[in-house]
Length: 261
Image (cartoon, rainbow, N blue to C red; front, side, top):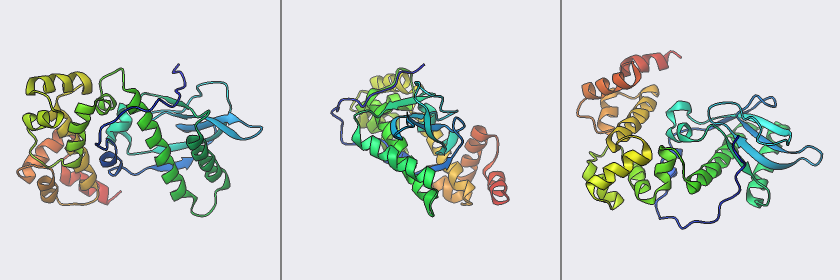
């Protein structure tokens, strides 16, 4: 069972924003759920209704971390398997908000919206849920990660600059020596460090990120030629081949499927 985590001590961070480019690509949807059925739960004392802990399970139900009862439960969807941040997170995050006034206030607001069901509550819940998950992501990144993955990469200031650069400009013809320069490492040291920390090569991560964005654009009905040009593919055919290998469906078929959904 994961131990609840406390707010970490402040850590000196570099200037690059590790999350904004990712956050802007995925839309958060939060819907209230019966207790125990959601993947986001706020725990605390029912007598006074004071939240003490938040539990988030990106890929399952938010089973409790301690004996506190569930005050509210919700299902939070943020791009599913397409969001590399969520798939890189632990199966369950338990955040102890005791003594954290900012988080406690956020949890109170979230609870009030879930319970009141006032007009306009859906967009408010979506935004509060996004803020809540972003705060949990910040904690996870500041703590680092024990297993290779995106969170571990973002926790390393050298690799974070590289990953953010790929997120910000996915259509650029990034070469490994360009990325090594972003990290301030020699080419061989960069390639070794990236593979050990993120669990795949820089070019493999870049291809997956491009494919994630391309699939979003195709689903929205954009033309294959425009998407190919946007993400650095020499032709629509080149994008279609890479897309089919990744998703077992060609872009035109996906666009037709999305149009009739």
